[in-house]
Image (cartoon, rainbow, N blue to C red; front, side, top):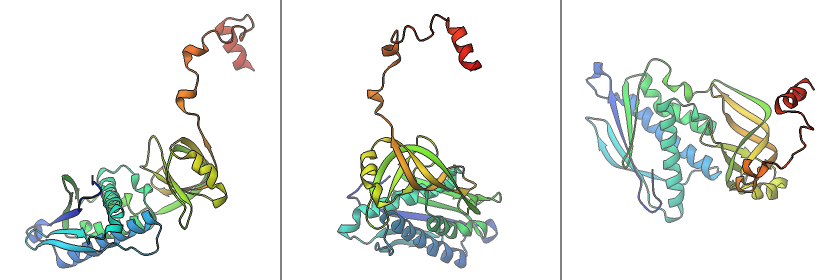
Length: 270
């Protein structure tokens, strides 16, 4: 969505209800602005693991008739990479709400709460919110069937278990954590681990790994929100595993004279 080195402009357009002739009520616009800034800051804190957000934003466009707004981050060289990460995650959060895929579990609770505040005007006098990131456009239209249920998780549960995916984005500043990218389900899962496991985690980076521990869920999503790691096991590289062809004829006496059907039946009876 965004390329490091380019300035990021995020543009919004709010459309009011028909009873207001498409105009947006001031209270709704104020709530949207406050929620948008809260969401950007919550994402930055979650991505950098810092207590305070450092990126400042300024308004580059403001139109009253169509309630259009554009913002960009104040240029700070040391924060440019963070700006692009925040903008990307911001777009992913809005897309998850729009698509109803349940991927909000990949976001920290403060981010979900801020998104709910940002989109709350859709339950009142705002008919739609359209966000543009360059050529990417994400439009969310207000509905009466619980649009924000993906954002406002009502209950959190936890259970001991395991989950598999590729390990990446290792962080050792402050809390030790990495992100697990599963083959299906949420975009990523935050995995918190003890510093004593650092060597084992480093060996697992960029490898397909099964993580075992306390898995936290945020209903209604069936996918983990966070895992408190007890152990992890990296799987062998697929290129190092034997192929079916290489196993042909390798164990000629495996069935001990039985045909295949009788051998399978014997195993099932056991």
